[in-house]
Image: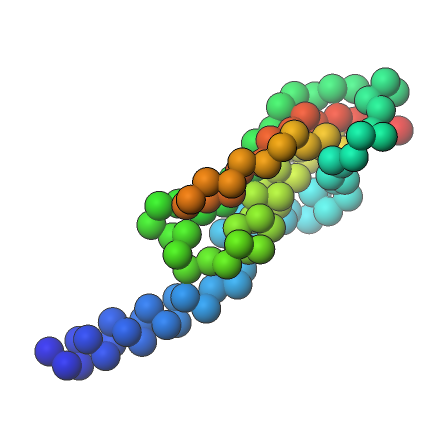
Length: 111
């Protein structure tokens, strides 16, 4: 019984050190720019659609620090924009839930 408890504690300590988000950035999404500033002007851009990035679940959020959850959500959104052919995402306000982090935005192709 003590061996099982020790094994469980070791496994929890190992998993709690996770510092890599589940959503990794695809190479094709590297050049996608995220914009949150009020100076962004989409007048010369082509709107491609809405994108939503999320990281974390009710069963995994305890094992990831906030910055990893944020990075994973941003990676997810950039990957989606890249799949649409976009190079820019204008982000709306992020949603910080107790168990995950979600960001929303609009994907554009800009010159």
